[in-house]
Image 1 (cartoon, rainbow, N blue to C red):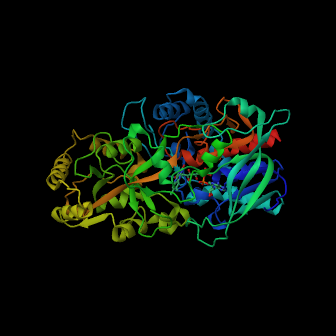
Image 2: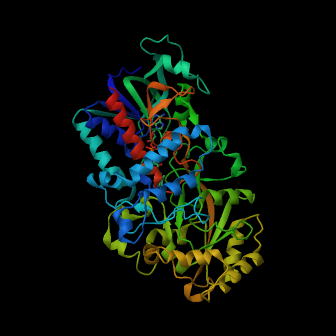
Image 3: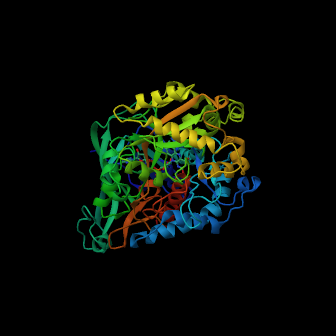
Length: 574
Ligand SMILES: Cc1cc2nc3c(=O)[nH]c(=O)nc-3n(C[C@H](O)[C@H](O)[C@H](O)COP(=O)(O)OP(=O)(O)OC[C@H]3O[C@@H](n4cnc5c(N)ncnc54)[C@H](O)[C@@H]3O)c2cc1C
Protein backbone atom coordinates (compact mmCIF):
# COMPACT_ATOMS: atom_id res chain seq x y z
CA UNK A 1 0.00 0.00 0.00
CA UNK A 2 1.37 3.42 -0.97
CA UNK A 3 0.83 6.04 1.72
CA UNK A 4 -0.11 9.40 0.25
CA UNK A 5 -0.16 12.85 1.78
CA UNK A 6 -3.40 14.61 2.53
CA UNK A 7 -4.76 16.99 -0.12
CA UNK A 8 -7.73 19.39 -0.10
CA UNK A 9 -9.49 17.90 -3.09
CA UNK A 10 -9.17 14.78 -5.21
CA UNK A 11 -10.23 15.07 -8.83
CA UNK A 12 -10.83 11.73 -10.54
CA UNK A 13 -10.03 12.14 -14.23
CA UNK A 14 -7.80 14.58 -16.12
CA UNK A 15 -10.29 15.37 -18.89
CA UNK A 16 -11.66 18.83 -19.63
CA UNK A 17 -14.15 18.83 -16.73
CA UNK A 18 -11.48 17.76 -14.23
CA UNK A 19 -9.00 20.34 -15.49
CA UNK A 20 -11.54 23.17 -15.35
CA UNK A 21 -12.54 22.21 -11.79
CA UNK A 22 -8.87 22.01 -10.80
CA UNK A 23 -8.09 25.40 -12.33
CA UNK A 24 -10.87 26.98 -10.29
CA UNK A 25 -9.67 25.31 -7.09
CA UNK A 26 -6.11 26.44 -7.71
CA UNK A 27 -7.39 29.98 -8.20
CA UNK A 28 -8.93 29.69 -4.73
CA UNK A 29 -5.61 28.50 -3.30
CA UNK A 30 -6.67 24.89 -2.68
CA UNK A 31 -4.40 21.89 -3.09
CA UNK A 32 -5.69 19.40 -5.64
CA UNK A 33 -4.56 15.88 -6.44
CA UNK A 34 -5.68 14.64 -9.85
CA UNK A 35 -5.80 10.86 -10.15
CA UNK A 36 -5.85 9.58 -13.71
CA UNK A 37 -5.71 6.02 -14.98
CA UNK A 38 -4.05 6.89 -18.29
CA UNK A 39 -0.41 7.86 -18.84
CA UNK A 40 0.62 11.52 -19.14
CA UNK A 41 0.43 11.28 -22.96
CA UNK A 42 -3.38 11.27 -22.74
CA UNK A 43 -3.67 14.33 -20.48
CA UNK A 44 -6.87 16.20 -21.36
CA UNK A 45 -8.97 13.12 -22.17
CA UNK A 46 -11.48 13.21 -25.00
CA UNK A 47 -11.42 16.97 -25.43
CA UNK A 48 -8.01 16.78 -27.08
CA UNK A 49 -9.52 14.67 -29.87
CA UNK A 50 -12.58 16.82 -30.21
CA UNK A 51 -13.47 19.15 -33.03
CA UNK A 52 -13.76 21.99 -30.54
CA UNK A 53 -17.31 22.99 -31.52
CA UNK A 54 -18.92 25.22 -28.91
CA UNK A 55 -22.58 26.22 -28.58
CA UNK A 56 -22.87 29.99 -28.13
CA UNK A 57 -25.96 32.16 -28.25
CA UNK A 58 -26.01 35.58 -29.93
CA UNK A 59 -22.25 35.80 -30.43
CA UNK A 60 -20.40 38.45 -32.45
CA UNK A 61 -19.55 35.67 -34.96
CA UNK A 62 -23.26 34.96 -35.47
CA UNK A 63 -24.15 38.63 -35.70
CA UNK A 64 -21.45 39.30 -38.31
CA UNK A 65 -23.04 36.60 -40.51
CA UNK A 66 -26.52 38.04 -40.08
CA UNK A 67 -27.71 35.36 -37.64
CA UNK A 68 -30.17 36.81 -35.16
CA UNK A 69 -30.13 34.59 -32.11
CA UNK A 70 -31.51 35.09 -28.62
CA UNK A 71 -31.78 33.32 -25.30
CA UNK A 72 -35.52 32.85 -25.88
CA UNK A 73 -34.96 31.17 -29.26
CA UNK A 74 -32.18 28.98 -27.89
CA UNK A 75 -34.36 27.99 -24.91
CA UNK A 76 -37.18 27.06 -27.30
CA UNK A 77 -34.74 24.90 -29.27
CA UNK A 78 -33.09 23.33 -26.21
CA UNK A 79 -36.28 22.35 -24.43
CA UNK A 80 -37.90 21.28 -27.70
CA UNK A 81 -34.96 18.94 -28.29
CA UNK A 82 -34.51 17.78 -24.70
CA UNK A 83 -38.08 16.56 -24.28
CA UNK A 84 -37.72 16.40 -20.50
CA UNK A 85 -40.52 14.15 -19.34
CA UNK A 86 -39.95 12.71 -15.89
CA UNK A 87 -39.51 13.57 -12.22
CA UNK A 88 -35.83 12.67 -12.64
CA UNK A 89 -35.53 15.69 -14.92
CA UNK A 90 -35.83 18.12 -11.99
CA UNK A 91 -32.09 18.92 -11.78
CA UNK A 92 -31.42 18.38 -15.49
CA UNK A 93 -33.99 21.09 -16.31
CA UNK A 94 -32.38 23.53 -13.87
CA UNK A 95 -28.95 22.72 -15.34
CA UNK A 96 -30.28 23.26 -18.86
CA UNK A 97 -31.58 26.71 -17.92
CA UNK A 98 -28.34 27.62 -16.11
CA UNK A 99 -26.28 26.43 -19.08
CA UNK A 100 -28.38 28.43 -21.54
CA UNK A 101 -27.80 31.55 -19.42
CA UNK A 102 -24.05 30.77 -19.45
CA UNK A 103 -23.97 30.23 -23.23
CA UNK A 104 -25.89 33.46 -23.83
CA UNK A 105 -23.95 35.33 -21.16
CA UNK A 106 -20.39 35.14 -19.95
CA UNK A 107 -19.27 31.93 -21.70
CA UNK A 108 -17.67 33.54 -24.73
CA UNK A 109 -16.15 36.47 -22.84
CA UNK A 110 -14.77 34.17 -20.13
CA UNK A 111 -13.16 31.86 -22.67
CA UNK A 112 -11.95 34.78 -24.80
CA UNK A 113 -10.30 36.32 -21.75
CA UNK A 114 -8.37 33.07 -21.36
CA UNK A 115 -7.18 33.16 -24.95
CA UNK A 116 -9.80 31.00 -26.72
CA UNK A 117 -10.61 32.26 -30.22
CA UNK A 118 -13.18 31.18 -32.79
CA UNK A 119 -13.25 30.46 -36.51
CA UNK A 120 -15.39 33.23 -38.04
CA UNK A 121 -17.90 30.95 -39.82
CA UNK A 122 -20.49 29.49 -37.49
CA UNK A 123 -21.75 26.00 -38.31
CA UNK A 124 -25.38 24.91 -38.38
CA UNK A 125 -25.61 21.53 -36.67
CA UNK A 126 -28.75 19.51 -35.87
CA UNK A 127 -31.05 21.47 -38.17
CA UNK A 128 -34.15 19.61 -36.99
CA UNK A 129 -36.65 19.79 -39.80
CA UNK A 130 -39.75 19.59 -37.63
CA UNK A 131 -41.97 22.38 -36.26
CA UNK A 132 -40.82 25.30 -34.12
CA UNK A 133 -41.38 23.57 -30.79
CA UNK A 134 -39.55 20.37 -31.74
CA UNK A 135 -35.95 19.21 -32.17
CA UNK A 136 -33.17 21.24 -33.71
CA UNK A 137 -31.26 24.49 -33.93
CA UNK A 138 -33.34 27.26 -35.52
CA UNK A 139 -30.09 29.09 -36.36
CA UNK A 140 -26.37 28.27 -36.72
CA UNK A 141 -24.72 28.10 -33.27
CA UNK A 142 -21.77 25.68 -33.67
CA UNK A 143 -18.66 27.82 -33.08
CA UNK A 144 -15.43 26.07 -34.03
CA UNK A 145 -12.56 26.86 -31.72
CA UNK A 146 -9.40 28.12 -33.42
CA UNK A 147 -7.09 25.20 -32.60
CA UNK A 148 -10.07 22.76 -32.24
CA UNK A 149 -10.09 20.53 -29.11
CA UNK A 150 -6.52 21.29 -28.05
CA UNK A 151 -7.42 24.98 -28.32
CA UNK A 152 -10.31 24.51 -25.89
CA UNK A 153 -8.07 22.63 -23.46
CA UNK A 154 -5.07 24.94 -23.67
CA UNK A 155 -6.00 27.59 -21.07
CA UNK A 156 -7.03 24.99 -18.52
CA UNK A 157 -3.94 22.85 -19.09
CA UNK A 158 -1.85 26.00 -18.63
CA UNK A 159 -3.63 26.90 -15.38
CA UNK A 160 -3.24 23.37 -14.01
CA UNK A 161 0.44 23.22 -14.99
CA UNK A 162 1.01 26.56 -13.27
CA UNK A 163 -0.68 25.00 -10.23
CA UNK A 164 1.82 22.13 -10.39
CA UNK A 165 4.71 24.62 -10.47
CA UNK A 166 3.19 26.52 -7.56
CA UNK A 167 2.94 23.34 -5.52
CA UNK A 168 -0.87 23.41 -5.51
CA UNK A 169 -1.51 20.50 -7.91
CA UNK A 170 -0.22 16.95 -7.90
CA UNK A 171 -1.02 14.79 -10.92
CA UNK A 172 -0.93 11.04 -10.39
CA UNK A 173 -1.05 9.14 -13.67
CA UNK A 174 -1.64 5.38 -13.84
CA UNK A 175 -3.79 5.67 -10.71
CA UNK A 176 -7.05 3.88 -11.38
CA UNK A 177 -9.76 4.56 -8.82
CA UNK A 178 -11.67 1.40 -7.83
CA UNK A 179 -13.53 2.67 -4.79
CA UNK A 180 -14.73 5.87 -3.13
CA UNK A 181 -13.97 5.73 0.60
CA UNK A 182 -17.13 6.33 2.59
CA UNK A 183 -17.04 6.88 6.35
CA UNK A 184 -19.41 8.06 9.06
CA UNK A 185 -19.91 11.81 8.87
CA UNK A 186 -19.11 13.84 11.98
CA UNK A 187 -22.05 13.50 14.36
CA UNK A 188 -23.45 10.68 12.21
CA UNK A 189 -24.11 7.13 13.21
CA UNK A 190 -21.90 5.64 10.59
CA UNK A 191 -22.75 2.70 8.43
CA UNK A 192 -21.89 1.64 4.95
CA UNK A 193 -22.85 3.70 1.98
CA UNK A 194 -25.35 2.48 -0.53
CA UNK A 195 -24.74 -0.54 -2.60
CA UNK A 196 -25.97 -1.24 -6.08
CA UNK A 197 -29.01 0.90 -6.63
CA UNK A 198 -28.22 3.47 -3.97
CA UNK A 199 -28.91 3.34 -0.27
CA UNK A 200 -31.46 6.06 0.24
CA UNK A 201 -31.17 9.55 1.68
CA UNK A 202 -30.74 8.21 5.23
CA UNK A 203 -27.37 6.66 4.53
CA UNK A 204 -26.29 9.77 2.63
CA UNK A 205 -27.00 12.01 5.61
CA UNK A 206 -24.86 9.85 7.89
CA UNK A 207 -21.88 9.23 5.67
CA UNK A 208 -19.21 11.21 3.95
CA UNK A 209 -16.86 10.50 1.06
CA UNK A 210 -13.34 11.01 2.40
CA UNK A 211 -11.11 9.74 -0.37
CA UNK A 212 -10.39 7.13 -2.99
CA UNK A 213 -8.76 3.73 -3.19
CA UNK A 214 -7.49 2.09 -6.28
CA UNK A 215 -4.93 0.25 -8.33
CA UNK A 216 -1.54 1.45 -9.43
CA UNK A 217 -1.22 0.46 -13.07
CA UNK A 218 2.10 -0.47 -14.60
CA UNK A 219 3.90 2.39 -16.38
CA UNK A 220 2.84 2.80 -19.98
CA UNK A 221 4.57 4.54 -22.87
CA UNK A 222 1.68 4.30 -25.33
CA UNK A 223 0.85 7.38 -27.39
CA UNK A 224 -2.16 9.59 -26.73
CA UNK A 225 -5.47 7.76 -27.04
CA UNK A 226 -3.92 4.32 -27.50
CA UNK A 227 -5.32 1.71 -25.12
CA UNK A 228 -2.97 1.35 -22.15
CA UNK A 229 -2.42 -1.78 -20.11
CA UNK A 230 -4.52 -2.56 -17.05
CA UNK A 231 -1.82 -4.64 -15.33
CA UNK A 232 -1.92 -3.79 -11.63
CA UNK A 233 1.39 -3.36 -9.83
CA UNK A 234 0.17 -1.97 -6.50
CA UNK A 235 -2.56 -0.18 -4.60
CA UNK A 236 -3.12 3.34 -3.37
CA UNK A 237 -5.31 5.20 -0.95
CA UNK A 238 -5.71 8.96 -0.85
CA UNK A 239 -7.78 11.11 1.48
CA UNK A 240 -9.18 14.61 1.01
CA UNK A 241 -11.94 16.94 2.18
CA UNK A 242 -13.78 16.48 -1.10
CA UNK A 243 -13.72 14.26 -4.19
CA UNK A 244 -14.88 15.43 -7.62
CA UNK A 245 -15.69 12.69 -10.12
CA UNK A 246 -14.93 13.82 -13.68
CA UNK A 247 -14.38 10.41 -15.23
CA UNK A 248 -16.29 10.80 -18.51
CA UNK A 249 -19.02 8.62 -20.03
CA UNK A 250 -19.47 5.06 -21.28
CA UNK A 251 -18.95 5.35 -25.06
CA UNK A 252 -15.74 3.32 -25.14
CA UNK A 253 -17.39 0.39 -23.37
CA UNK A 254 -19.77 -1.27 -25.83
CA UNK A 255 -20.99 -3.73 -23.19
CA UNK A 256 -22.25 -0.83 -21.06
CA UNK A 257 -23.67 0.93 -24.11
CA UNK A 258 -25.63 -2.21 -25.01
CA UNK A 259 -26.70 -2.81 -21.40
CA UNK A 260 -28.15 0.72 -21.21
CA UNK A 261 -29.41 0.86 -24.79
CA UNK A 262 -32.85 2.56 -24.77
CA UNK A 263 -35.80 0.33 -25.69
CA UNK A 264 -37.34 3.26 -27.58
CA UNK A 265 -34.50 3.01 -30.14
CA UNK A 266 -35.11 -0.69 -30.77
CA UNK A 267 -32.44 -3.36 -30.40
CA UNK A 268 -28.82 -2.26 -29.94
CA UNK A 269 -26.92 -2.50 -33.24
CA UNK A 270 -24.97 -5.72 -33.74
CA UNK A 271 -21.85 -3.81 -34.67
CA UNK A 272 -20.71 -0.32 -33.78
CA UNK A 273 -17.52 1.68 -34.13
CA UNK A 274 -16.02 3.59 -31.21
CA UNK A 275 -15.89 7.35 -31.46
CA UNK A 276 -13.97 7.65 -28.19
CA UNK A 277 -10.81 6.09 -26.71
CA UNK A 278 -11.20 2.98 -24.56
CA UNK A 279 -10.54 4.93 -21.35
CA UNK A 280 -14.12 6.19 -21.72
CA UNK A 281 -15.02 3.01 -19.88
CA UNK A 282 -17.85 4.13 -17.56
CA UNK A 283 -16.41 2.23 -14.56
CA UNK A 284 -16.55 5.24 -12.24
CA UNK A 285 -20.32 5.48 -12.67
CA UNK A 286 -20.83 2.10 -11.01
CA UNK A 287 -18.19 2.93 -8.39
CA UNK A 288 -20.00 6.19 -7.57
CA UNK A 289 -23.28 4.32 -7.35
CA UNK A 290 -21.78 1.90 -4.87
CA UNK A 291 -20.86 4.92 -2.74
CA UNK A 292 -24.52 5.99 -2.75
CA UNK A 293 -24.71 8.24 -5.80
CA UNK A 294 -27.91 8.14 -7.78
CA UNK A 295 -27.53 7.47 -11.50
CA UNK A 296 -30.32 8.79 -13.68
CA UNK A 297 -31.25 8.77 -17.35
CA UNK A 298 -28.75 6.01 -18.05
CA UNK A 299 -30.57 5.12 -21.26
CA UNK A 300 -30.05 8.54 -22.80
CA UNK A 301 -27.06 8.59 -25.13
CA UNK A 302 -25.82 10.37 -28.21
CA UNK A 303 -24.33 8.17 -30.91
CA UNK A 304 -23.77 9.11 -34.52
CA UNK A 305 -24.96 7.40 -37.69
CA UNK A 306 -22.33 8.79 -40.07
CA UNK A 307 -19.33 6.79 -38.80
CA UNK A 308 -16.54 5.58 -41.07
CA UNK A 309 -13.82 3.09 -40.22
CA UNK A 310 -10.54 4.85 -39.51
CA UNK A 311 -7.90 3.43 -41.88
CA UNK A 312 -5.27 4.55 -39.36
CA UNK A 313 -6.87 3.66 -36.01
CA UNK A 314 -5.63 5.00 -32.67
CA UNK A 315 -7.99 3.05 -30.44
CA UNK A 316 -9.92 -0.22 -31.01
CA UNK A 317 -12.74 -0.04 -33.58
CA UNK A 318 -11.83 3.60 -34.12
CA UNK A 319 -14.60 5.34 -36.02
CA UNK A 320 -14.59 8.88 -37.35
CA UNK A 321 -17.79 10.85 -37.63
CA UNK A 322 -18.53 12.69 -40.84
CA UNK A 323 -20.04 16.10 -40.12
CA UNK A 324 -22.15 16.21 -43.26
CA UNK A 325 -23.63 19.11 -45.17
CA UNK A 326 -27.24 18.55 -46.26
CA UNK A 327 -26.96 17.41 -49.90
CA UNK A 328 -25.98 13.72 -49.85
CA UNK A 329 -28.70 11.24 -50.67
CA UNK A 330 -29.21 9.05 -47.58
CA UNK A 331 -30.24 5.45 -48.22
CA UNK A 332 -30.78 2.53 -45.89
CA UNK A 333 -28.85 -0.73 -46.26
CA UNK A 334 -31.30 -2.04 -48.85
CA UNK A 335 -31.26 1.13 -50.92
CA UNK A 336 -34.45 2.83 -49.72
CA UNK A 337 -34.24 6.57 -49.10
CA UNK A 338 -34.50 7.71 -45.48
CA UNK A 339 -37.76 9.50 -44.69
CA UNK A 340 -38.26 13.26 -44.26
CA UNK A 341 -36.68 15.05 -42.38
CA UNK A 342 -33.80 12.62 -41.90
CA UNK A 343 -31.40 14.52 -44.10
CA UNK A 344 -27.68 14.67 -43.31
CA UNK A 345 -27.08 16.82 -40.23
CA UNK A 346 -30.73 17.23 -39.24
CA UNK A 347 -31.67 14.81 -36.48
CA UNK A 348 -29.02 12.44 -35.14
CA UNK A 349 -31.19 10.33 -32.87
CA UNK A 350 -34.19 10.31 -35.21
CA UNK A 351 -31.88 8.89 -37.86
CA UNK A 352 -30.40 6.37 -35.44
CA UNK A 353 -33.87 5.18 -34.48
CA UNK A 354 -34.85 4.81 -38.13
CA UNK A 355 -31.70 2.95 -39.14
CA UNK A 356 -32.03 0.53 -36.23
CA UNK A 357 -35.67 -0.07 -37.23
CA UNK A 358 -34.52 -1.26 -40.67
CA UNK A 359 -32.87 -4.26 -39.02
CA UNK A 360 -29.42 -3.26 -40.32
CA UNK A 361 -26.70 -1.34 -38.54
CA UNK A 362 -25.47 0.72 -41.44
CA UNK A 363 -26.71 3.06 -44.16
CA UNK A 364 -25.36 4.82 -47.26
CA UNK A 365 -24.58 8.29 -48.48
CA UNK A 366 -24.59 8.70 -52.25
CA UNK A 367 -23.00 11.93 -53.45
CA UNK A 368 -20.66 13.53 -55.95
CA UNK A 369 -17.12 14.84 -55.86
CA UNK A 370 -18.63 18.33 -55.92
CA UNK A 371 -20.58 17.56 -52.74
CA UNK A 372 -17.73 15.87 -50.89
CA UNK A 373 -15.43 18.83 -51.56
CA UNK A 374 -17.74 21.28 -49.89
CA UNK A 375 -19.84 19.27 -47.51
CA UNK A 376 -17.70 16.66 -45.78
CA UNK A 377 -15.90 17.57 -42.60
CA UNK A 378 -14.50 14.95 -40.24
CA UNK A 379 -14.97 15.35 -36.51
CA UNK A 380 -11.70 15.22 -34.61
CA UNK A 381 -8.73 17.49 -34.04
CA UNK A 382 -6.35 15.20 -35.93
CA UNK A 383 -8.65 15.22 -38.99
CA UNK A 384 -8.48 19.01 -39.25
CA UNK A 385 -4.81 19.93 -39.33
CA UNK A 386 -5.61 23.41 -40.69
CA UNK A 387 -7.90 24.42 -37.82
CA UNK A 388 -6.00 22.48 -35.16
CA UNK A 389 -2.62 23.78 -36.28
CA UNK A 390 -4.03 27.31 -36.83
CA UNK A 391 -2.56 27.05 -40.34
CA UNK A 392 -4.03 29.76 -42.59
CA UNK A 393 -2.35 28.44 -45.73
CA UNK A 394 -3.97 25.01 -45.30
CA UNK A 395 -7.25 26.61 -44.29
CA UNK A 396 -7.42 28.63 -47.52
CA UNK A 397 -7.69 25.33 -49.39
CA UNK A 398 -11.16 24.79 -47.89
CA UNK A 399 -12.59 27.48 -50.11
CA UNK A 400 -10.60 26.46 -53.18
CA UNK A 401 -11.24 23.42 -55.40
CA UNK A 402 -10.61 19.88 -54.12
CA UNK A 403 -11.50 18.27 -50.80
CA UNK A 404 -9.29 18.77 -47.72
CA UNK A 405 -6.38 16.29 -47.49
CA UNK A 406 -7.89 14.07 -44.75
CA UNK A 407 -11.11 13.65 -46.78
CA UNK A 408 -9.18 12.71 -49.91
CA UNK A 409 -7.15 10.26 -47.79
CA UNK A 410 -10.33 8.52 -46.64
CA UNK A 411 -11.67 8.50 -50.19
CA UNK A 412 -8.49 6.76 -51.33
CA UNK A 413 -7.80 4.46 -48.37
CA UNK A 414 -11.05 4.16 -46.42
CA UNK A 415 -12.73 0.74 -46.60
CA UNK A 416 -16.20 2.34 -46.62
CA UNK A 417 -15.78 4.39 -49.79
CA UNK A 418 -16.81 3.52 -53.34
CA UNK A 419 -15.72 5.94 -56.07
CA UNK A 420 -16.93 5.39 -59.63
CA UNK A 421 -17.27 7.23 -62.92
CA UNK A 422 -20.66 5.70 -63.71
CA UNK A 423 -23.70 4.45 -61.88
CA UNK A 424 -23.43 0.70 -62.69
CA UNK A 425 -19.88 0.65 -61.31
CA UNK A 426 -20.97 2.55 -58.21
CA UNK A 427 -23.85 0.12 -57.59
CA UNK A 428 -21.57 -2.88 -58.05
CA UNK A 429 -19.13 -1.40 -55.53
CA UNK A 430 -21.93 -0.78 -53.03
CA UNK A 431 -23.12 -4.36 -53.40
CA UNK A 432 -19.58 -5.60 -52.85
CA UNK A 433 -19.40 -3.70 -49.52
CA UNK A 434 -22.86 -4.99 -48.56
CA UNK A 435 -21.68 -8.60 -48.37
CA UNK A 436 -24.65 -10.89 -47.79
CA UNK A 437 -27.19 -8.04 -47.60
CA UNK A 438 -28.96 -7.65 -50.96
CA UNK A 439 -28.89 -4.05 -52.18
CA UNK A 440 -31.91 -3.20 -54.32
CA UNK A 441 -29.85 -1.60 -57.08
CA UNK A 442 -32.91 -0.83 -59.20
CA UNK A 443 -34.36 1.06 -56.26
CA UNK A 444 -31.15 3.03 -55.73
CA UNK A 445 -31.08 3.99 -59.38
CA UNK A 446 -34.75 5.03 -59.22
CA UNK A 447 -34.11 7.17 -56.11
CA UNK A 448 -31.15 8.91 -57.75
CA UNK A 449 -32.89 9.57 -61.06
CA UNK A 450 -36.11 10.74 -59.37
CA UNK A 451 -34.15 13.12 -57.15
CA UNK A 452 -32.24 14.47 -60.15
CA UNK A 453 -35.52 15.22 -61.98
CA UNK A 454 -36.42 17.60 -59.13
CA UNK A 455 -33.29 19.74 -59.57
CA UNK A 456 -33.56 21.46 -62.95
CA UNK A 457 -36.31 24.00 -62.12
CA UNK A 458 -37.07 26.34 -59.23
CA UNK A 459 -39.88 24.13 -57.93
CA UNK A 460 -39.68 20.81 -56.10
CA UNK A 461 -41.69 18.54 -53.91
CA UNK A 462 -38.48 17.05 -52.48
CA UNK A 463 -38.00 18.67 -49.08
CA UNK A 464 -34.29 17.86 -49.01
CA UNK A 465 -33.78 20.03 -52.07
CA UNK A 466 -35.83 22.79 -50.47
CA UNK A 467 -33.64 22.46 -47.37
CA UNK A 468 -30.45 22.68 -49.42
CA UNK A 469 -31.70 25.79 -51.21
CA UNK A 470 -32.74 27.30 -47.86
CA UNK A 471 -29.33 26.56 -46.35
CA UNK A 472 -27.60 28.46 -49.13
CA UNK A 473 -29.43 31.60 -48.02
CA UNK A 474 -27.02 31.53 -45.07
CA UNK A 475 -23.68 33.01 -46.08
CA UNK A 476 -21.68 30.57 -43.92
CA UNK A 477 -23.27 27.57 -45.62
CA UNK A 478 -22.95 29.07 -49.08
CA UNK A 479 -19.26 29.83 -48.58
CA UNK A 480 -17.95 26.56 -47.17
CA UNK A 481 -20.68 24.07 -46.34
CA UNK A 482 -23.36 23.53 -48.96
CA UNK A 483 -22.70 22.73 -52.62
CA UNK A 484 -24.87 24.39 -55.23
CA UNK A 485 -27.72 22.00 -56.11
CA UNK A 486 -26.87 19.78 -59.07
CA UNK A 487 -27.82 16.44 -60.56
CA UNK A 488 -25.97 13.56 -58.94
CA UNK A 489 -25.55 11.99 -62.37
CA UNK A 490 -24.08 15.13 -63.92
CA UNK A 491 -20.62 13.94 -65.11
CA UNK A 492 -19.23 17.44 -64.49
CA UNK A 493 -19.93 17.00 -60.77
CA UNK A 494 -18.34 13.55 -60.60
CA UNK A 495 -17.02 11.07 -59.91
CA UNK A 496 -19.90 9.47 -58.03
CA UNK A 497 -19.19 8.45 -54.45
CA UNK A 498 -20.97 6.10 -52.05
CA UNK A 499 -20.01 5.90 -48.38
CA UNK A 500 -21.04 3.04 -46.10
CA UNK A 501 -21.96 4.65 -42.79
CA UNK A 502 -21.67 2.87 -39.46
CA UNK A 503 -23.06 3.69 -36.06
CA UNK A 504 -20.34 5.22 -33.95
CA UNK A 505 -20.63 5.51 -30.17
CA UNK A 506 -19.85 8.85 -28.56
CA UNK A 507 -21.62 10.65 -25.72
CA UNK A 508 -23.43 9.72 -22.55
CA UNK A 509 -26.36 12.04 -21.85
CA UNK A 510 -27.38 10.62 -18.46
CA UNK A 511 -25.18 10.09 -15.42
CA UNK A 512 -24.63 11.00 -11.79
CA UNK A 513 -27.42 13.20 -10.44
CA UNK A 514 -26.06 16.52 -9.13
CA UNK A 515 -27.48 19.78 -7.86
CA UNK A 516 -26.40 23.11 -9.33
CA UNK A 517 -23.28 23.13 -7.16
CA UNK A 518 -22.23 19.77 -8.60
CA UNK A 519 -22.95 18.02 -5.28
CA UNK A 520 -23.73 14.37 -5.87
CA UNK A 521 -27.20 13.36 -4.71
CA UNK A 522 -28.21 10.08 -3.11
CA UNK A 523 -31.45 8.33 -3.94
CA UNK A 524 -33.36 10.24 -1.25
CA UNK A 525 -32.32 13.50 -2.89
CA UNK A 526 -29.87 14.62 -0.17
CA UNK A 527 -26.30 15.53 -1.17
CA UNK A 528 -23.60 13.03 -0.28
CA UNK A 529 -21.12 14.94 1.84
CA UNK A 530 -17.73 15.38 0.25
CA UNK A 531 -18.75 14.05 -3.18
CA UNK A 532 -19.13 16.15 -6.35
CA UNK A 533 -19.32 15.31 -10.05
CA UNK A 534 -18.96 17.21 -13.33
CA UNK A 535 -18.61 16.73 -17.06
CA UNK A 536 -19.87 13.73 -18.97
CA UNK A 537 -19.93 11.60 -15.79
CA UNK A 538 -22.75 13.83 -14.52
CA UNK A 539 -24.56 13.91 -17.87
CA UNK A 540 -22.79 17.31 -18.27
CA UNK A 541 -24.66 18.51 -15.19
CA UNK A 542 -27.58 17.31 -13.10
CA UNK A 543 -27.50 13.81 -14.55
CA UNK A 544 -28.68 14.82 -18.00
CA UNK A 545 -29.00 18.51 -18.91
CA UNK A 546 -29.53 17.61 -22.59
CA UNK A 547 -32.60 15.50 -21.91
CA UNK A 548 -32.95 13.11 -24.85
CA UNK A 549 -31.19 15.14 -27.56
CA UNK A 550 -28.41 17.64 -28.00
CA UNK A 551 -28.08 20.75 -30.14
CA UNK A 552 -24.34 19.93 -30.61
CA UNK A 553 -21.29 21.78 -29.36
CA UNK A 554 -22.88 21.48 -25.94
CA UNK A 555 -20.55 18.80 -24.50
CA UNK A 556 -17.26 20.68 -24.22
CA UNK A 557 -19.23 23.68 -22.97
CA UNK A 558 -21.06 21.36 -20.55
CA UNK A 559 -17.70 20.19 -19.16
CA UNK A 560 -16.51 23.78 -18.83
CA UNK A 561 -19.67 24.96 -17.09
CA UNK A 562 -20.17 21.98 -14.77
CA UNK A 563 -16.42 21.74 -13.99
CA UNK A 564 -16.41 25.41 -13.10
CA UNK A 565 -19.54 25.08 -10.94
CA UNK A 566 -18.12 22.12 -9.02
CA UNK A 567 -14.66 23.66 -8.61
CA UNK A 568 -16.09 26.91 -7.29
CA UNK A 569 -18.57 25.15 -5.01
CA UNK A 570 -15.90 22.93 -3.46
CA UNK A 571 -13.58 25.92 -2.99
CA UNK A 572 -16.40 27.79 -1.22
CA UNK A 573 -17.29 24.79 0.95
CA UNK A 574 -13.78 24.05 2.25
C1 LIG B 1 -13.59 12.84 -31.69
C2 LIG B 1 -14.42 13.65 -30.74
C3 LIG B 1 -14.98 14.84 -31.18
C4 LIG B 1 -15.74 15.62 -30.30
N1 LIG B 1 -16.18 16.85 -30.73
C5 LIG B 1 -16.88 17.64 -29.86
C6 LIG B 1 -17.28 18.95 -30.25
O1 LIG B 1 -16.96 19.44 -31.34
N2 LIG B 1 -18.02 19.67 -29.36
C7 LIG B 1 -18.38 19.20 -28.14
O2 LIG B 1 -19.06 19.90 -27.38
N3 LIG B 1 -17.98 17.96 -27.74
C8 LIG B 1 -17.23 17.19 -28.56
N4 LIG B 1 -16.79 15.95 -28.15
C9 LIG B 1 -17.18 15.48 -26.81
C10 LIG B 1 -16.28 16.01 -25.71
O3 LIG B 1 -14.94 16.05 -26.15
C11 LIG B 1 -16.38 15.12 -24.45
O4 LIG B 1 -17.73 14.91 -24.13
C12 LIG B 1 -15.69 15.77 -23.27
O5 LIG B 1 -14.36 16.11 -23.61
C13 LIG B 1 -15.70 14.85 -22.04
O6 LIG B 1 -14.86 15.39 -21.05
P1 LIG B 1 -14.84 14.81 -19.56
O7 LIG B 1 -13.82 15.62 -18.84
O8 LIG B 1 -16.19 14.77 -18.99
O9 LIG B 1 -14.36 13.30 -19.70
P2 LIG B 1 -13.08 12.61 -20.40
O10 LIG B 1 -12.46 13.48 -21.40
O11 LIG B 1 -13.54 11.26 -20.83
O12 LIG B 1 -12.04 12.47 -19.23
C14 LIG B 1 -12.24 11.58 -18.16
C15 LIG B 1 -10.91 11.09 -17.65
O13 LIG B 1 -11.15 10.30 -16.48
C16 LIG B 1 -10.28 9.20 -16.48
N5 LIG B 1 -10.87 8.13 -15.67
C17 LIG B 1 -12.03 7.46 -15.89
N6 LIG B 1 -12.23 6.55 -14.92
C18 LIG B 1 -11.19 6.64 -14.06
C19 LIG B 1 -10.84 5.94 -12.88
N7 LIG B 1 -11.60 4.96 -12.39
N8 LIG B 1 -9.68 6.27 -12.26
C20 LIG B 1 -8.87 7.26 -12.75
N9 LIG B 1 -9.16 7.94 -13.89
C21 LIG B 1 -10.32 7.65 -14.53
C22 LIG B 1 -10.17 8.83 -17.96
O14 LIG B 1 -9.01 8.07 -18.22
C23 LIG B 1 -10.18 10.21 -18.63
O15 LIG B 1 -8.87 10.70 -18.82
C24 LIG B 1 -16.00 15.16 -28.99
C25 LIG B 1 -15.45 13.96 -28.54
C26 LIG B 1 -14.64 13.22 -29.41
C27 LIG B 1 -14.00 11.95 -28.89
